[in-house]
Image (cartoon, rainbow over all chains, first blue to last red; front, side):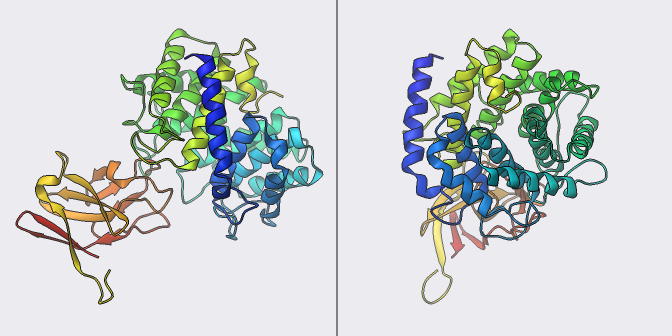
Length: 322
Length: 104
């Protein structure tokens, strides 16, 4: 894919997202926090977050006393999935913003995840599969460890290793992860688990046995599940974006291989081909929604970094290296 | 729904269903997904209550039920009941000859 085209698309879609700010802004009023977190990731990866400090402060303002967040900013019950998204955006955003209030919120979030882990290492959220749910606090802890946050460090390391253990124990022999109650196909869960939870461990000392092999097998599964036309999961835009992003960071950390690079190129071509005039929908031909548009911009930013001569550029966009 | 309460509204014909027995119709601003399973037609709000995934693109399973293609939430097609913390809106369906009507 031509990089000038990628740069133009990022600029164009960013302008669209900024124009639609009322639809995702916490400053404007109560919001779906998963959407907010998606938007904050775009601000981070387009390096525009300093223009939006008030959004980060508003995210801190709706954090609950237990350190978590609810799916909607005006709800009161903390849940794991969205809390991990919010916490991840705060710790990564505060590398740039450097605000003490955000540091405090990150530490409270650490307390929340340490307090909500189950005995077998998983985290649970009734809205999501346990494996998928578990990958997100582990991802947050990946970044906590990578960025050197010291709050309850020993507890974090223990919880992180137990979370990784739960994920490893549930990999299928063919290399994917499946949940019969949520995602029998396993595409989205597998893409999430290898990019968000597992692969960072290879940069954090490779102390947990089996991670490299688990990632290699998971990545091979993703490749085998890709359709001829470059998409995944019956032309699911969300899952195709997940698979392309996952393939980029995992292959870069494992060591680039031509088959994965070709799969990434085919996937990205399909994503660009199925963009609406502004943004993306959940499937080709569907109306644009802001969450998918944020995912699309994020995928383009990560592809741009994947093509950068500095091999760490793309890994930095997961927060796994400073 | 009219001021007098729910009314039967014609939404299409059996011949409008695709080869998998599905059709997406828009009625009074609402997207309704129609599924024909074992000779019975079901009508369910197309947008998954979880993250608004399109149920028309979902996976039909025994029950019969439909599983959202986005994050796998499963809904009974007759009742809208789910194992997850949500319930989908379903509509009574009447088939007269080839004509499909839903009670709105």
